[in-house]
Structures are given as C-alpha cells and as structure tokens.
Length: 145
Image (cartoon, rainbow, N blue to C red; front, side, top):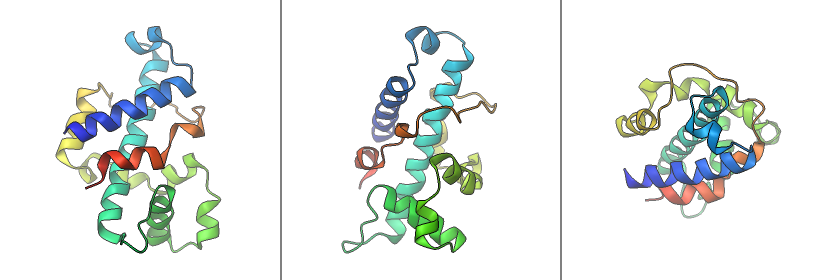
C-alpha cells in the first residue's frame, strides 16, 4: 500500500504546482480542490492500469517504459496504428480507456486509496488541467516490481 501512497503524493505535488491549486482550494470544500483530487485520481488510476499492462506485455527487450505502455494499451484495445495513437491528447486517451476506470476494474487496494483521499462519487471537470500533470516516466518507478 505504501507504493500507492507514494505515487499519489508525487502526482498530487505535480497537479497542485502545475495548476496553481492553493492551500485554501485544497483544504476547503471547494469545487477546484475536488476537481484537483479527481485529476490526481485519473492519473493515479492510469498508472495502476499501465503497471498491470506492463506486467502482462513488457519484456527486457521491449519494456514499455513511460508513455509507451499507454500507446501499447490503446493499440491493443483499438487496433489503431501507432502514429494515430501518439497523436491523441491526454484527455482523449482517457476517453478511449474510460471503461477501464470503473471501480469494478480496479484492485481493492486501489479503491481503498481513492476512498482514503476523499474522492467524491461525482464527475468534476478536469479538461482545463495541464497536460504536464501526467509524467509517466517519473510515475512508473513507484509501481515497478
């Protein structure tokens, strides 16, 4: 569980810095603060999904490092050509993978982390958050085996 907490913290720092989330936003019941938590949760879940994908498909010869794991996951699910997959924005990749983000597709311990972080059961807009929030090469180290 510590690896999940460490990953959450790394993403939280990045999201708050990139999007100027104030301490007031974070500590009060503000829409902006809850949207920031939702953005962190999106990236956190994506990293968990990519770690599982690497476990299944990566090798010493093709480790699927960083964003390569995302491209490969989308390629496997859609059959799109690699150059098409690489043109997607971050928000578009989340759209393509939306069903994987459902609770029933997440490990129990991941759902527990989300609950412990106060993630609300409501959709909040995150489209205006920075694309720089996702740093796959920095994040993947937390979930390596």
